[in-house]
Image: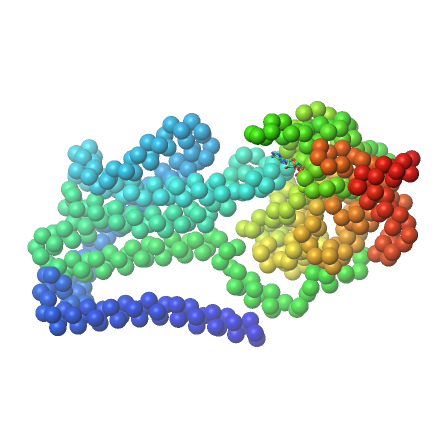
Length: 286
Length: 262
Ligand SMILES: Nc1ncnc2c1ncn2[C@@H]1O[C@H](COP(=O)(O)OP(=O)(O)O)[C@@H](O)[C@H]1O
Ligand SMILES: [Mg+2]
C-alpha cells in the first residue's frame, strides 16, 4: 500500500517536472506574441508564434518535412559513422600508448579547425552529393563521443581489474565484462551530446554546397526574407533533434537497468515480507 | 587433517616507490595449510597482509620464495585459489545471481548447472529472493555473503578471505562469524582469513598466525584448541580468553608470551 502510494507520488512529481518547463514555454510564447503585436514588428524581422504555427500547417507537410527527411538521413548516417569511429579510436587510445602519443594530439588539433570551413573542399573531393555532409556530421560528432568513451573506459577502479585477474580473466573478458559496463553511463553521456551535435552538423553543412535539406531550405528562406518559414523549419528541426535525443535516452534506460530500475526494485522489496539479514542467517542448519 | 594443501616458504616481496626506493612489505613468510583447515592471519593494518594474499592469488610476483598448491608451484599464476578481496567488489550492473556465477562464467563452464547450484545455495547464504536484485538493494552483511558465495562458487581448493567483515557493525559481524564457521564446516573449505580482530581470529581458526608490523613476518603461531563444534558460547570460556591473551601478547611484541608457547 505504502509503496503504491509513493509510486503514485513519484508519477505526480514527474508530471510536475514536465509542467514547469511547459509553463515557461507557454509564458514565453505569450509574451512573444504580445510583443510582436504591440510593437508592430515586421514578420520578416520576427514573426508571431501564431504566424509560425500557421506557416507550419501550410508548408510543414509539403515543403519542410521532405527536406527534414534529407537532413535526418544525413544526421543518422553521420552519427552512426561517428559511433564507429569513436569506438575504434577509444579502444586504440586505451590499449596503444604509441597511438596515444602519436595520433591523439593530431585528433585534438583537428578539432580546433572550424570544420564547416572544410565543407566546400569536401564537395570538391567527394562530389555534389550527401557524402561531404555526412563526413562533416561525423567529424563534428565523433570527438565528444570518443572523449566520453575513453573517460568511461578508464574510470575503472584498479581493484576490479585485480579481482578479474584473480579469476584468470582474459583481456577480452576484462574489456567486455568489466570496462564496458563501467563505461556505459559515460558513453551514453557522449552519445547524447553527439546526437545534438550531429543534427547541428548536418544542418549547417547544408548551408554550403547543397541543393536540398532543411539547412538548405533555411538558407534559401533567409535570403528571401521568408523569416516565418525559417522559424517554422527551426521548430521542426528542434522537435526532430529532441526526438533523437529522447531515443538515445530511451536506449540508455533500457541498457542500464541497474541504474534506472531502482524505484521498481525498492517497490519489489517493500512487497516482500520483512526479512532482516540476521533472520535469514539464523535459519537452522540442515 | 590429511595432506598439505598450501605450502608457502621463504616469501619476500617489496614495492618500488618513487620517493623511498624499494620498500619491503613481506620478509620471510612461511605458512603451511592442511586440507579443511581454517587459519587466520592477524596483524596491524599496513603490515603486508593483503600483499601476501595478492602473492598467493598470483597477482603479484614475490622477489623470492615459493607458493605450492597441492604440490604445484603457483607463483605468478592467477586462477588457482579463490580470493575474496578486501572490498566486496560486487559488479553493480549484474544481479546477485549473475554476480555469484562470475567465476565459472569466466572459466567458460556450462552455465546451466552452475546457475542451478547458485540458486540452491542462495538460501543457505541468506540471499533467497534476491537473485534478481542488484547489489545496491543489499545490506552490508548481505553483500559480504554474496561476495563469499561468489568466491565459493569458484570451487577452488583454498579460499582466501581478506578482512571480509571489517566494514560491518559488531552485531552483524558476530552473526556472520557463526554463519561462516557453519559454511566452512558444511562445504569442507580450506580457508585463510585476514583480520585485525583477535576475537574473530580465535573464534574461527584452528591456528592463528600473528604478523609483525611491516615488513611482515610471523611473530608467532597460536594453535587454537577449542572444540571443532563451537557455538558463540565458547567466547565466554577461560580457554578462549587464554588464546586471545596469547594473540594479543604476540601482537604487542611481548617476547615472554612467545616463549610460553613452546
Ligand atoms: N602497490 C603498492 N605500491 C607501493 N606500496 C604499496 C602498494 N600496495 C601496498 N603498499 C604498501 O605495502 C604495505 C602493506 O600493504 P598491505 O599489504 O595492503 O597491508 P595490509 O593489508 O596488511 O593492511 C603498506 O605499507 C602499503 O602502503
Ligand atoms: Mg589489507
